[in-house]
Amino acid sequence: MNTRHVKVVLSLLLACACGAARAAPLPHAEPVPGGVAIVPLGLAGARAPRAYFNGDRVMVRRDGREWIAVVGIPLGAKPGDYAIRVRGEGRRAFAVQGKQYAVQRVTIENRRKVDPTALDMKRIRREHAIIEATLDTWRPAARVPLRFDLPVRGPVSSPFGLRRIFNGEPRAPHSGIDIAVPAGTPIRAPAPGRVAAVGGFFFDGNMVMLDHGQGLVTLYGHMEKILVKKGQQVKRGEVIGLVGQTGRATGPHLHWGVSLNNARVDPTLFLSHESLAKLGER
Image 1: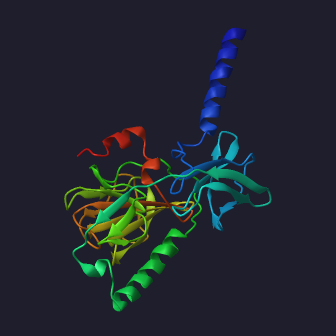
Image 2 (image 1 turned 135 degrees about the vertical axis):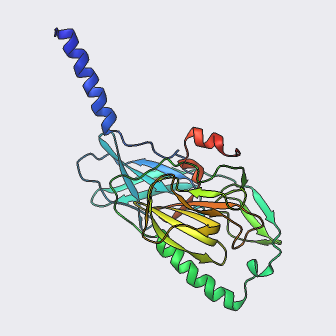
Image 3 (image 1 turned 90 degrees about the horizontal axis):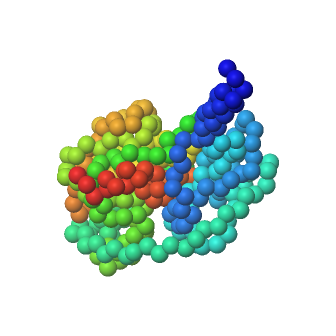
């Protein structure tokens, strides 16, 4: 093998090594309320640094030879300058830009789903504690899937971030996306994960929560039927339940939510361009 061929082979090997070092595809970066910020940490080394935002541990991934933080931004965040804290390494600044979400007005026939009774509120508080504890979970994982498949294919009836008004009364912004499909449609796990919680909830109906690791949790609400159990490991594409109309719902649909470092973020940021193109199809 002559010198020229040796150089070509070495170049190819180097390119392969660099490609192997690069992490799997990241979410689409959109540093807005309800979005995701990709923050370079300027650190190398074999051990992943620990980083925190608003007191919650954030996901850290290797990108090439350096570490980056994948940060979920709460829907209630104001535009401005923020920073994550890296243990033993100080702070890393990033900026959050403004974003205006649309308003959605919805009429709910069941008044209790808008103005719950005192007994309902006791149940709601218990369920809220379960949901918050699950979303606040940090599970170590070397590899976390950051590109999702669609759990169902259909039109988006309510996009993420809508400022919702039920029966004329303002409520919390929409923390996921609603995909309108017929009742009984199979719901498939968009990525591998562990079933962190299942149950019937006052607002969310029959719901499954999947823990994908490093503070990334996905939610699936208003199911007709749940087909998995807590603690179960599920594969990408595995059926976890059937679409329904349970809880606070005006028609059959899937409510799909994504939480990253305990911040509710737009699920579409985790979809490939091919999957985004399939939203609206059946």
